[in-house]
Length: 496
Image (cartoon, rainbow, N blue to C red; front, side, top):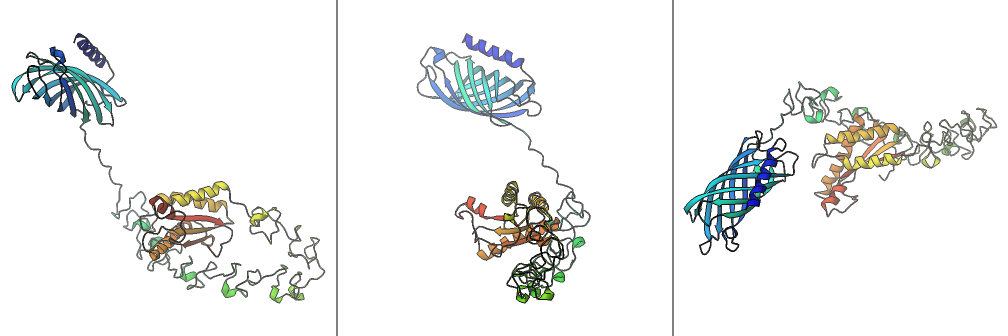
């Protein structure tokens, strides 16, 4: 008993000289306690150990630095000396805690003392004086797990006891204030910070500006403000969805990349002007095997270069003076050292065969710079991080920064084109999924055009649920299948 009292005095001294408290003070003056109690009335009264148990609830308030006053109420079942069986015990105390709970502390000890009234079977009351020590273990900013040992000195004989409590302490506090909503002068739901027309109401899709035709292109930027269109076509209709507005499309009902017209053999000559629409060529869309400017179909010597005036057959002449006769010179009017043709970028591939004559690259890549590994990794990162509104093709604002990386890559590789491919999982109707994949790919296409990328360098297509890369039977697999892929290409492949 004497050692126990000396230990409590030592704890009181240590707490008194500890650093400034920062919990259950003026900022958080109120706390509630709840715990389970285990007690013994036998060992202190020359009898066998008598274990009892009960619970305790209490309210505590800070009244001075390091000092809290509390009112704990206890209810339990005890085996009291001089009685048989269990006795219902109750007590109501007034106690003073000397404690210090710091913001950064994980463990905070305390000491306490006080007085209270004790009842047996809700009668036979007498005074008891509790004192002891405990420790709080922080589990959050406001919550603690509590362990406490308590000695209770009774005014009645044979009622001194020791108690052990295990429970919970919670600091009462006000809820965090909600942040003020951002300013929105025109009350259109678009904050002034991002509203391009802060004094004129408009939809978020048009950055807060008026949009009569609701096509997502603000009237101030819309070349056709009363007809719905796309960002890629400056707000004008594009019925064949080829990225060329109908008003500028030479083939408005057929999708194509050459002024809106198709180019089946992808030789840069629209089918309507191509004399050989199914064979790629350089002479009115027709092949020219000897590169003499005379199409094979009109060339009397298709394997030997020659002028058109001579039926495509060679003359013994060297117009450009490069040592290669005109009849075998694929570039008779441009001096060069590679078979008679120049090599502007010095990459060892003649300009007439070089798909990127002004940018050096290996022959394995048709004379164009190879796409770096880190660039491919950045494209994979964009594929995984472009995000849309749920079930819609509207890009989330967070995706704009991600797509800006694509803009940088396209500027780094000016000779390349970009294939944009949309995919979905198999949830829902396949027709709806196909359309959603097209719309999401188109949303990326429209953003890149808006950011200044030439629409002729872009192509978008949707595949719906037809090309999964993971199982659609799991949420993780479906999440991987919902994607938009980006690939740098020199020429678009017909199958993609």
